[in-house]
View 1 (cartoon, helix red, strand yellow):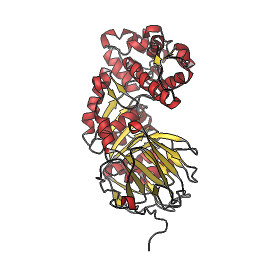
View 2: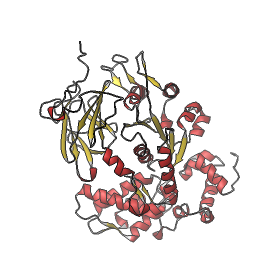
View 3: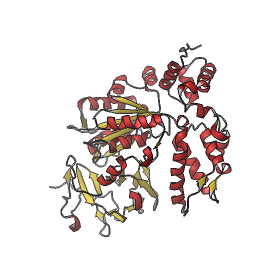
View 4: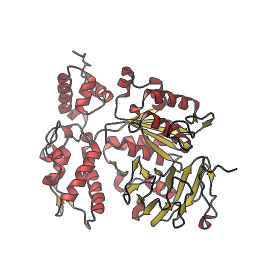
Length: 470
């Protein structure tokens, strides 16, 4: 007898050539944009339009019917626009539509990219766009690479992306290191898109955003009745991402108990749901990211060294924005164009030379994320043809704990972006930070806005003896 709690995905006449349910391991070969629906132990695949709306729900008036109690009759809608733009909105559902862990308000539209999952009730959905993936692999004209949040023109970043492309072809696990806001998630998606797994799921998990029990449930899944509130069986990310990539963001925030279980899963290459008896093998590429110094965390006893070695097949360090001054103009232009579209402006404003100089002279402790927010605000305030300095946020005009920007960008942030032979100001900053922190390298690194590993590399670069704590 069929399990009444098992989600059903009835075949649609229009899509009769596509099986209504496919095993998770089945490779979807049909060309063009498709929607994968992951629920329980099954995946259904459905063709999608290139433009327009695509409604999802349990009723008869939707484009894709998911017959499951957690799905409302008119639950959610996908919106497809020009330039491969994809948005998801909630249609007033009972159990919610979630994108990147956030429940959407009724009518709220949030952008998603191909390969990114979102939740409709208890079902996991993902848009696949093989053609779009191939387009994203190609560098833009002029030798710069434009990757939806990282504009690669700086020599160090170009080298980093070239290395990332080589790494992507392998199966080695990758550890991405860098400050908050530098674009670790963007690089993780790029590695997946450049890999042989690009047509398989890319499933991200923010390890610092969930409780211990929810982390275990998200990673490993659970059986019905495994704990209070487990009213139905849930497939974990490690099962759903089979043959694809799992991105563990903020991996340094994993509780020790979850670290132990994740290590065992990595060693055995098999996962058992919480409350389950049977293990299932998987083939997954892991990409982890953190802004923490994991070596220091290991010394402090908050991160397991054996898990670190499992995840750290190769480390890629993304430099902070203050060391990539040459990319600020390109990033700003991109953000201006995007913000102008959202604001309904027919012509995006330009960036005045004075405003650009201020942006290039700022320390950017929040990196690309902070620049994005600054430009978003400036576009809204700008009523003319060009963004001026007085339309930039007060945090940029008079930053706290950072050098005051100077016209022309002739400040410490610029010195950090040039070669070692011109880096005497940075050497002085490092010495000043060590002096303020009484030789404590971890505290000095935090003061400088870099990781401890980066600080140690700078000490060697400038022939600064490693101090003893006083």
